[in-house]
Length: 368
Image (tube, rainbow, N blue to C red; front, side):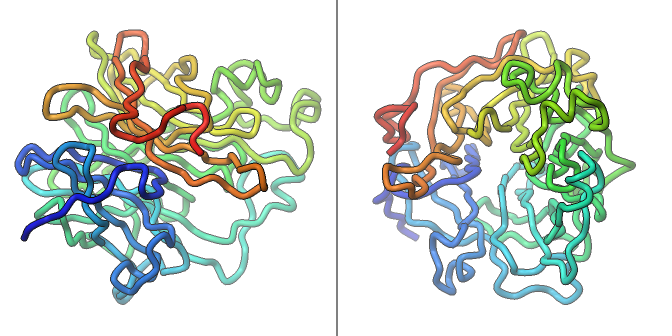
């Protein structure tokens, strides 16, 4: 099949984008949640995962669906009340494994598990959410959920944004966010996976860190240095956390190995109402940690980042812009992919040259 590449990256919206550089085909595959950008039946009526193919990261194909919610299998844990979120595709043992977040609308809202008293009392949880694993023989799909009856993450936890991490001994893990909506202070967790079937969890989750541990929170004045550690009862919490304020968010983990063998993870949260890209490090090199928070990487309302190498060997970081920003009329700005060269050092990830030749963004601090 002849594929045309009429699009540039800035021609379409991106939110939580992911690129697989597939050595077997010599192609880049850019995956993204549809989020109702394309509403035809061919695109899951807006509830699907789309894929853009590229030979060079500059020219992209029209979107093609690789997973949708058109035909829900009997007994599925999830429904079609929302688009899939945050798809990632990883090559593993000769197949392609998609991690994606799926949802179920609840007939009766639940209550948060933790947080300030007013949040536990008044907060409502209207969806359950979990990370599922789908598999295909080609990066072009179609991807099929391995077990529709249960997520890979714990069924009773509101989980999202799963990513694949291999431990220092090669053991596969899923690192994922436990949603702030349920906890108020969202966490990052990890669960071991069966190396022969990445949809199958092994053992119980391991806690990695909480969102309020982000080093910028003390500077912002909304959490003490080192975070809350689950204690919202004291006078400090009453002073720092106004009633009806939002919680502390963990989003978008993605791993990288340092030259000395430490394990890094980028992750995203909020600072003063805008997206912030941060990072944490496990100097033991193990997924289980302990994890230390490092200074943020980017403060331009961009985040949910991932890293990949081009076929020429350049390490790039891809994330999306405009999580919260609006135009002069108060309308939300479109989210696009933004790309930087980057370096992984023993002290963390450093952004390098902005690649406007790839993402088409003239000013990385103001994507309009």
